[in-house]
Amino acid sequence: MRNNLYRATTWLMILVFPASMLMADVNSVMLQSKGKVTVNGKAAAKSTAVFAGDAVRTADESFASISTKGSTALLLANSEAKFSSQAVELTAGRAAVTTSNGMKAKAGKLTIAPAIDVNTSFQVTLNQGKVEVVALEGKVSVSDGKQTILLEKGEQLAAASTGMEDVPVAKNSIAAGALIALIAAIAAASAAVAIATTRDKQDTSPSTF
Figure 1 (cartoon, helix red, strand yellow):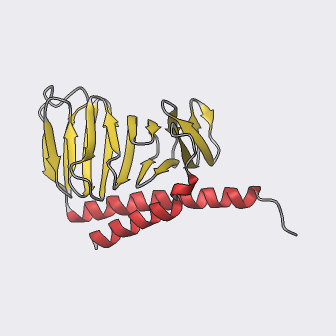
Figure 2: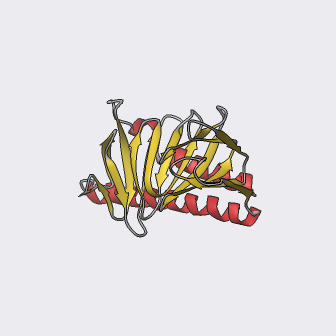
Figure 3: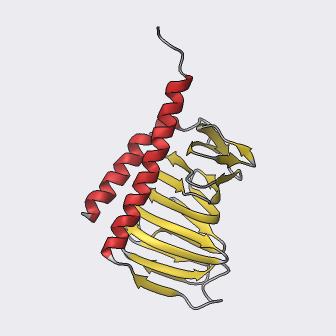
């Protein structure tokens, strides 16, 4: 069942955020959003280009997603991050990454990335100086530049955002039910963005009558 949920999430992200939506400028990516989302403090359209270094923030019950070739990064509610074509820098809240070509996430001094170049999915949470990483699919690498810890599917890690030597690292496995619920919640958020974007396009399209 977990594999089916993961496959469904992956295909949903691919269908919702196709590669054709990317801008020609390699320094920009297309942002899709649902709810109250801002880019550099200004309200974002449901679909808009963001550039490396732009700060994206989501409010309650709001989500934002970018898609590049082989990768999707989803910013969950009450979160803030900076996106680029191959990385998401989380500054607060939660983000989920699904990638087949090595997209990374950064939180404080930690870098989270696929350990090998296969389909990989993980969630990163940054809250009050604490980073939590959950490997949803595949093997995930967590590094602070001095040491690296590998997570297998279903494992999670908690560490200080300032580095893994500052505070003892906690690593453990999560219950199967909790993993399924987490994957389902991410899929639901992705679907919410898709619905909001589709409705916006329909509302702004000229009438054919």
